[in-house]
Length: 217
Image (cartoon, rainbow, N blue to C red; front, side, top):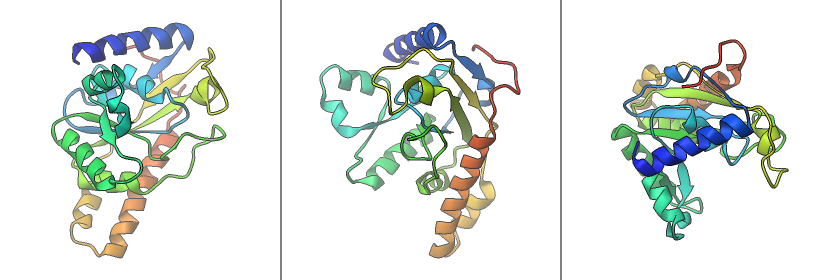
């Protein structure tokens, strides 16, 4: 971690501990080095720091490209190694940036649902994460956040104190599907993208917070 990220990491850990009384489960399942994709459900604007604060390594998030032009905020985003993406177009450029970060050994947080939940339930998965996974060689760690919709969902202007948790699953590799994707037809390739996305989301759904002892790394 660089110093700006470390200071933010410490601040969020204090915030989650005393304001939300957070719990962390199985953070040791996430490799401390090397490229890795963290695939999480999405309930709140503060899901990214919750997922990142539970790990002892820098996690790169995605951020809108226009935010980098804002004084101070842009400096923070660059030092936190946020990946700039253009949500109005240029998807290939964003994908290339993500793949470059993974190749360089970064951890990248992605949300397979694509947007925050409207009702607290996990939303249908989008095939885009399947494309990213197949284009990379990084393992995928499913992640599930709990309590974040109640704490700071779409319906709230400010976060309220509510117990939250983050749990990390077992890494997923997808070697066979990656190999098939290199030689299959275009129709089959689209099916593989969706299959990978569905398997990741199913792994996220299977994560339950209370089957293991909570950890505070």
